Image (tube, rainbow, N blue to C red; front, side, top):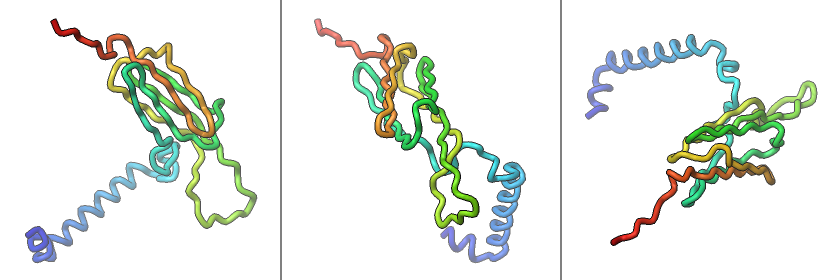
Length: 150
């Protein structure tokens, strides 16, 4: 039915394409130089993160291959943790031609909002084999309480 409405009238289809093209041009104007519009990593969401929890803590595990602990900053607030840093990729030799370029360098930042209040002053982090593990203790008010039945 939609096909018949759109494609039975060639003028309607043409108007839709013109509208899409107009929107694309507007976005291009807003973004300006697209290469420099977003200075952070452009290859998807980085770093990849797993978030798990038990009754006492949240556990954040982030894949950060090739990043040194000196290039990382971890900040904790009442209910969130921010992981930011810089991925440094060594420069290729002069005149190198790329056949494939998937690894990007630059600044990155991830904000992980947690479902409960935490104890920011007791957050611990470790980096081993390119995996960052952040242990985030829950606040006492956020921990489940066993209720006795009378």
